[in-house]
Amino acid sequence: MVKLLVYTVSAFYLLYGLVFAASPSGMFLLINDAELTTNTALVDVRATYGGLTLAVGIAIAYLGITNRLSEALVVSAVMLFGMAIARAFGLFVDGPSNWLMYLYLALEIIGGGLALVLMRYAPEDGNDA
Image (cartoon, rainbow, N blue to C red):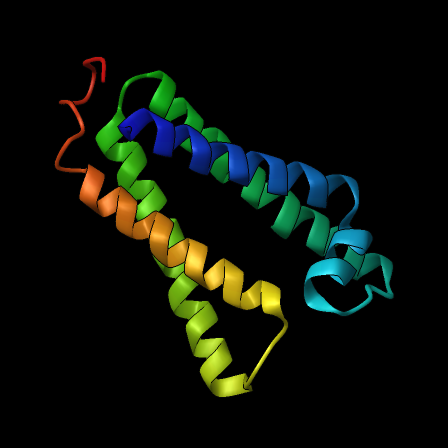
């Protein structure tokens, strides 16, 4: 179960990052209900949503592959709860949003919570799960 969560979180970040890197304008419109109207916006969204998210997926996958599962779970929990806290703050301060923001918030809380729970079941780093 530990490896399943680690690889699921990693796959999500990898896929999300790849899709945003490949199609920043289309994804931004789909998720944020807004258009990117300048080259600067395209480059920044491609780098931030695409590149940074892809890097997080690679880092979590690397930790999973090298059997550093406790570390992978910590990174996963920190990333997911960080996004959940910022998203909840945004919803509170900015008001209601589209349905994807609520779905993301739920998935971030569930995924982060699972990562915390599974930390007690993770084998010692370097050992197989």
